[in-house]
Amino acid sequence: MNLTPTEMDRLTIFTAAELARRYRSLGIKLSHPEAVALICDEVMTAARQDLAYEDIRDLAGRLLTTDDVQPGVAEMIPLICVEASFTQGTKLLAIFDPINPGQDAIADPIVPGEIITPDEMLQIFPAADTVSVEVMNTGDRDVQVRSHAHFFEANRALRFDRASAWGYKLDIPAGAGVRFEPGIPKTVRLVPIGGLRVVLGEAGLVAGPLDADGARDRAIALAQTRGYLGA
Image (cartoon, rainbow, N blue to C red; front, side):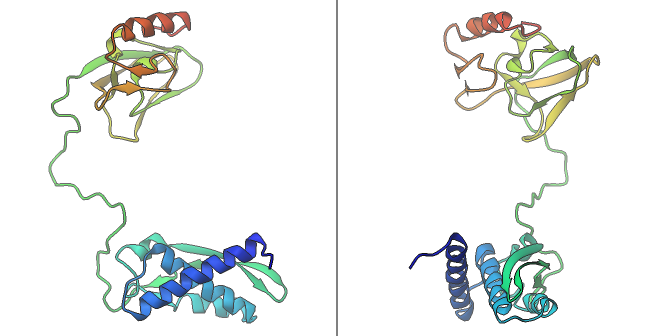
């Protein structure tokens, strides 16, 4: 028996849905993939029965409630799109908010990935030794430097004292960045890179431990050769 990729996907969905049905019958709350698989399987089966599009969409919204799934799962599934096979051919069904509130629903649901912080102001690096550098973008377009970049290796069109930025990164939250507009000086604060202090990739000026003997001098010489301003 030879199966197409689409048929293999269908069997995978069915298997996951059967597991979800078993868990549900045992009173086990469903995870995100289990809930999605169960809804998709029922929708695709209803399509093979050639039920009307509107009826299938209504069916999908009555399959599960928050009582059936783990906390936060409903908020993780705002939309499910299913390609289902009807008699007339394949159609895409869009199901919005398929998991409705159950009897045990709470007013403030748990949101996956939610960050709960204290009321007072937090300092990101309270004990770090910081340095401040003034940066001028000499290029003709904006340059953005991200939070974990080794600032010494930032865009070569940025003019600043690169030696003082050796082994430092921006003093900003993880995932954030600072944008430098052409011709506008901006002063930024830097904090030391922690951990093993090994920098790989970036601009290729370090490619190893920051604290190795001669690493800083070699990187400065390489930056000068490659035209990094301020080196």
